[in-house]
Image 1 (cartoon, rainbow, N blue to C red):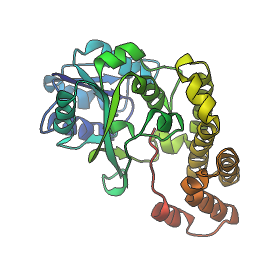
Image 2 (cartoon, rainbow, N blue to C red):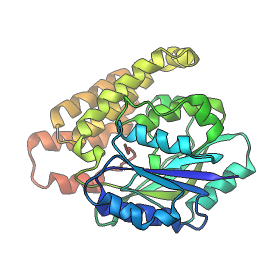
Image 3 (cartoon, rainbow, N blue to C red):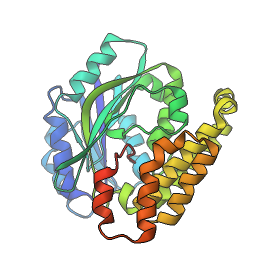
Length: 308
């Protein structure tokens, strides 16, 4: 069974070498590894060229964003299992071995995922994003899985179709919702990857825009016949989940009043969302009050389970 990995790259030369090294030096390196750069002019191409002999292929040309780059890479690949690793993230040494063992031992698996460490620009770990075994309903309710630790079968990818290029922030979650109905998904309670948080990362620089795509996914779900029954049974939970995503990223962006409003809206849809959002509500209140040291408090109390 073959594993193919793609790294989409654009303007992150300072992190790209670490990302590539983590892939090629893994205990069980992928059978194919492609780097698809979007025409970077920051030295990324020089980094890629240094590794060219260890890559299955690479290109640097203008594209239509991250989803387009990943689609290009997967179109070139031939592996039975697929994954992508962004140019600012890192894979853990044992991840590919553990994941491929899982796929090889269960032919009904279509997707495997694990936990992710959050790291800063210098690579220091400051949080562990811990997940659990999710159902399709959990995913529809926006229980987000951190993308660097997700792997899926090519056959399921071909059935689901490529990443939708109109999504810039929740393109991964949109794909998970199309993959999950096709078979079993498995959670491995191990740290499989590291997601880097820095000033230029989408989840930091454009945090306030994530909620818009959550609402876009809700509208997409309404158009899918295979989700009609699920929406009828749990529409409020799905809407509460979308508002939870909105609240999280609004607070991330320092927009505390609309962030608190989103928390309250989530509670109106589903009172159980209070348990999921109480820390976010507290942080929003602290921000509204303008208390000094908010960022330190925020970093200590949040348990970040979202990654774009």
